[in-house]
Amino acid sequence: MRYLLLPVLLALAVPVAAQGDVLDVALEGTDGKAATLRERMGDKPFLLLTFFSASCPCQSLHDPRIRELHERFGDRIEILSIDPEAHSSLARDLEEAKKRGYPFPILSDPDGVVADAVGARFATYTVILDADGEVRYRGGWDTDRTRLTDDARQWVRDAVVRLLAGEEPETRETKAFGCYLRRR
Image (cartoon, rainbow, N blue to C red; front, side, top):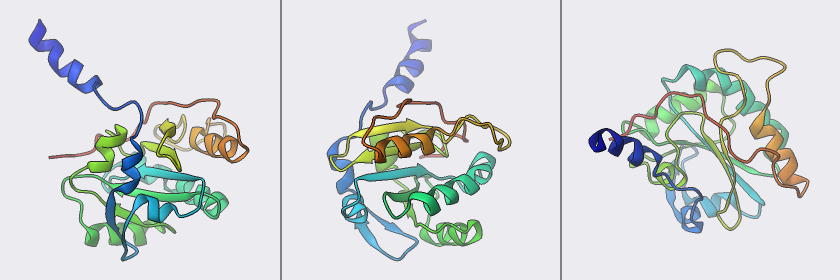
């Protein structure tokens, strides 16, 4: 019995909040820059990180919402995508960013340093960090799983709106519906 519980306990042992030092992790991006997350954030009050998988159908499904959020809020918050899969490479990520029309870079993190720091295990898992590295939101983009609907509860968008208004998100943690991120 205890051998059956060990994998469950290990799966539950993910960080509850990011450490401020996650902002000091430097990653190369499809924009040709190698910079820390803090440097990329600049003077914006929030950093939105969404975790990427090129092969995940849920990722492709949510691409329009990700681009829409960047169009609406990209001048007020920093939005980045991170590819933490073991086989990630800048060449593949550059191809994916172009194909998907991402107006923001995909950062390659094949060792999963940032994903581990914030507990990302699934594609489309998203965290919003403040300037101190505190997680203000974590989870999925919305309530849609297999197709986008007009009546979906858009958790990430709602969290961004409230944070920019100086309020806490109504929902601070949700479930991500993307594919399991393939790690080493």
